[in-house]
Image (cartoon, rainbow, N blue to C red; front, top):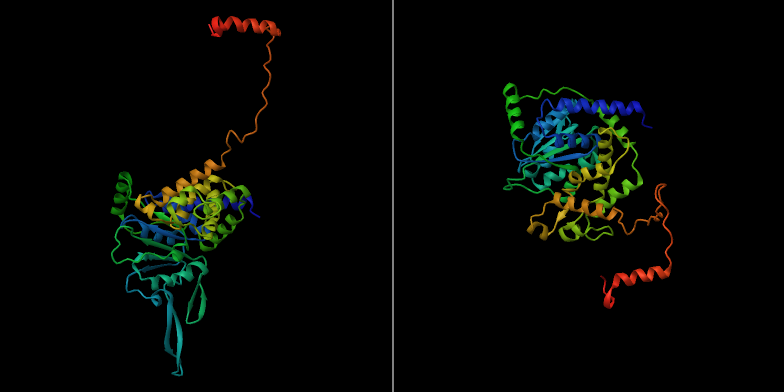
Length: 375
């Protein structure tokens, strides 16, 4: 049961986390907030942006703020799966006998920075699949549990595509969020240059430990979700499928493959964390609509018509949300008719006297004039 003290502690820790991250990261508020929400909810994050916008710096700062062991893996075309997971090596004991000993790879840490993940071959990318979903690593038939909390924060460059390998759908689906990191504005760029003239190192201090992070996740999981809000979130996910019972007209026109059930899980888990950050104790429709973009943009596959018309995934998500909003809005025809009240005369006005049928007919004749036309 969530107590008021738990809610207060959650809010204070989030405020401290954002305050410390602001010492290293200038601007990029949606990206920073989305990354923290995903980490509290227990999900992985894919950061997409051109070089030099602070993706790697953000991940390093998160390691300092959460005081968690941090490993960086630079993905290259010649990187092998054993370079990520580790492997068994032959060692000799005190008696001179040769035995196998497991040498852990860099993935045995709490925060993993998979830098330029799309530069590695699919064989190496698949080494992360088990770790990202089950938080285990299997080498030569032996499964080893990873330390909790465990996060994979990957970066990729959307511009340069030479020598890159697009991430398969199975791996994209394991990322809770795909966050787009934009270029900084003029004022933000001036602040960045002024800050880095003093020091290029991160200066953020610890604001939350791993145990506190797991406690925050446990608190968020107990936030209630109304049945109507849950149904709306699942309808939104189902509406991305062109052949589902809730298929939207937008999905039928532009989408080839919709979001998986993991999208629904990520949407609700992240919405609970966002509700607490905003000081609410329940999930709202606005939380679902706001988080739909980072949750769904990498999970829907566009068809040829969308590519030919240059319709982005975010535009399609916005169109689906708008379409669902119009469907759920009660129309005037479906609204119950309100009984009209008879006009009541005021105390200063005399009551209208009833008019007989003969007087009514004479008045109509006067209005019609000659040949039955109205005068």
